[in-house]
Amino acid sequence: MGGLTDDENIRRFKLGFGGDIVPVYSGYEAQSLYGSILLKARNVKVKLTKGIL
Image 1 (cartoon, rainbow, N blue to C red):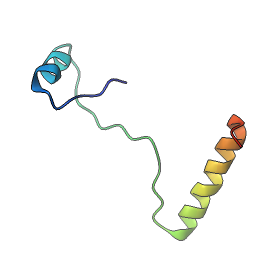
Image 2 (cartoon, rainbow, N blue to C red):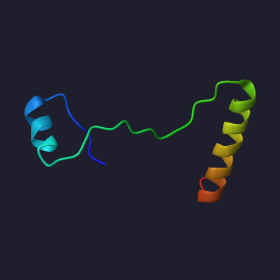
Image 3 (cartoon, rainbow, N blue to C red):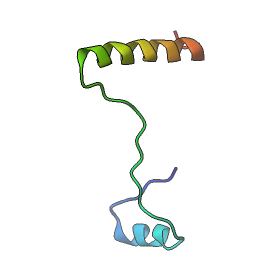
Image 4 (cartoon, rainbow, N blue to C red):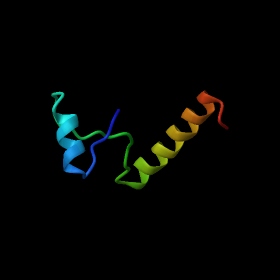
């Protein structure tokens, strides 16, 4: 996914093809100790599934 730049000329060129600026998120943020533990367990599971660990 291409990103937008602070350069107005490039931004205008990219937006000229149509579309909208949308926020993109790729992750989770724990807001409690319990959530933090669950996210750590999830990260380990994902790494084991991908064969990284």
